[in-house]
Image (cartoon, rainbow, N blue to C red; front, side, top):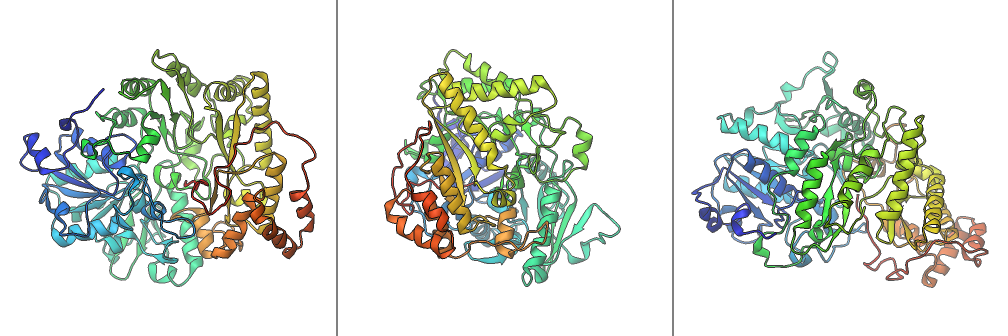
Length: 636
């Protein structure tokens, strides 16, 4: 399977004219390289608009530091400019948890850094408004989505207002944008003014302060604490978060949110309900070439390399982890593709020139939530809880893994497939959950067996995140006892089938609620399991997560409880070093730390020789210093 230049959205005037166009209806600016693949947001929006009959051009990674020719080359589009900062938040992309500049960018050819500015949503849209003040500018993507209201910015270490205040964009589309962008394009095409399009779901717009309703009389609207209040009182920002999260978890999209600023109000319209199977199929079935644009002439784009032979089965996540942005962006409710759509995409992958018989991932935001929803959806209509899995699996949740098993089996039956792997994170607590239905329990046991015996490429990565219940409670994650149970199943299946696989757990340090003694316990418990950790991350606050609100305010938004959080560089490094207890370079520092907190008992547990052997195979760490790059930083 090979693609020609005419198969892509045009990125230059020459390409546009080769298609027989004199002008375009819409120009999309992207902070990422243009990869024509359903895993890249600008391609999804571009293809969605193209399928509706619009002429769409895309300008990937425009130069914002020269004479701005990239912003001028297509001139004024007939309808609007779209801005997408990229598939990853630009600040997470650019900086480590210690706020150090990264030296590469996975979404840029040859991983070259410096191809986008910090906050491209703001930079690109302000440039466009300077050049073309009368042309609508609509911003989408995760960066704008999670900054749609006042939010804590870790990189500037301060509260910032809605991105609408800084960007001068006319509108934000938050979440997955296909439905909203089509409605906006249609209304602009019918000669409506952008200033009058204020009611589209999943959009954020400016409104006059006088437009804020009296919420006491209308429960369809929630009035948040205003900017002048929250910027001076972190507790008020924390209170706002409860409403923001609760409404984003509503099955019908929730209420309209309002936040007043000195000169205008920010209006956040409710989310769309989760896409139907037909709607999500329509998005994934668009004519993507699945490869980078020819302009890159074979240069390597690392983010694409990771997913080029993978297939996404669904959107959404009902896990509700405190540090994760997925539900805030994609929603809590699952949109699942049909078997036909999935299998068609798998066959497209098998036709790629470089395909060797291996699907790298049949997954999603969480690998094993495909086609899961409430058994009685009328109960879901009334429920705003942020997680269907914490503090316990909801009894109304259908946890049957049989549809997922059927997908695995049908993919593996395709002659060109040698093996399909599951690279996305597996919620083992979901797969292990005992129901009142013996058949579902058997299906779920079969899922775990199939996962381990058929779909692991030697290493199964799972995310317990921590070992201590007091930290896990704040994380909205299950007890570490569940991990012990899963590890036993994993070991038993490996022994029974003569496998030699590794279980690779992810952990986070410096999460709100985590103290040095919690990290010391984590080190002891993982040592006793014979793990030398390599998949670790220092907590990075990102906008619109529970953990970030706690980090900023020091209190839990739902309980009002004061929560300790490591915030200084020294505090964070002191926690992180416990991941690497096995490195002799840190032994004296760890011992001194334990003595300082009065935990001499943990010194003996951590540094005494092991008294028994364990069966888990340990991957030798690539480097033995935590400040070296090869220790993974996992971003959720």
